Length: 447
Image (tube, rainbow, N blue to C red; front, side, top):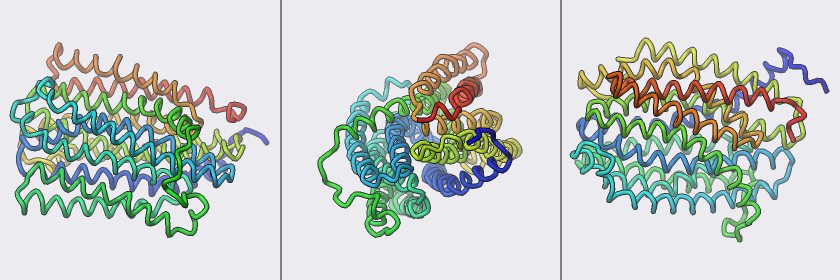
């Protein structure tokens, strides 16, 4: 079959990607609503509490994204098994992925607890450091159910059943908001109340997904009948071989943003609170290209498993077109409404001023951030995970963070300089990863 890509090919593949990406994007935005709800509601308590939430989330994020990277391997392998029509392998991926989620979550929880005695070494404002530990412990415990629900959701999504898990996650977000109101304000627990609300909501989500799996006729052949069967070492090894490099890639990016939070904290509570607002805005917008990239991971893996390598070029080109449309819209909204967005989180004039400047950088960097995210998803679908990991490390830690430090401290740009450094890192990553897609995007390269 000819590898020439026509407009019809682009429209056909683009439509299918968009239909799969839509619930994934909405679901990811729903997850962000949990962070937004915590940020907005804790911000009403005070600037110090908001800064402590930022500090705690920076530590949590580093651990969380590592586990999230591991769980992407479930999407890749399930999509491949589905493309081959191998139901037994799909069941094995799901069960062993859940084992991996529980073990990884427990180990990262213990690692996070080990950090607690050393929080002072991060040189945050003393009041912020003192307020952080109780909240941090609660959200660290939520790592285990978070990874479990992520594994189960990835499995269902890769089997082209994204909507049920979307509704379950949305229900979890709504529950979190209700519990926030009760714990933070009614019981007057403040920041700790937000931690309890998050833990409870995240713990109920995987239980609900398993109940759905058990009752779903569409997934009957592809979900485990027994969840306690003996782990498959070969399957776990395959999951780790794909998941660990993906984890390091995601960790390099998100770790850079979390690390930027520590650097911003050196400039005081106002800068740290503004950074949290900009980070929440950026992460929320990022869910759109991340959803598109995740859809392409699954569709690429499915096409490769089915031996339909001739579809690859139309898949990635149509995915890039969808990405371009989305970032034009979000970029304009952020640019024009940056101060309004900032004011929705906090009413302190200084916080709004600094956050507005940071959100402007977010608006500009969305273009490159989106393309590096989608290109990463395409490459994961082809099981190309090692090169992107090294690219991310170079872009964010060799280019982005050092540039941000230089601009902040030697050019007097403070937190704004750090965010310009991050934008440069995203640009480097987008260029390298897009070129990588073009290089390997040939039918002969797909196994």
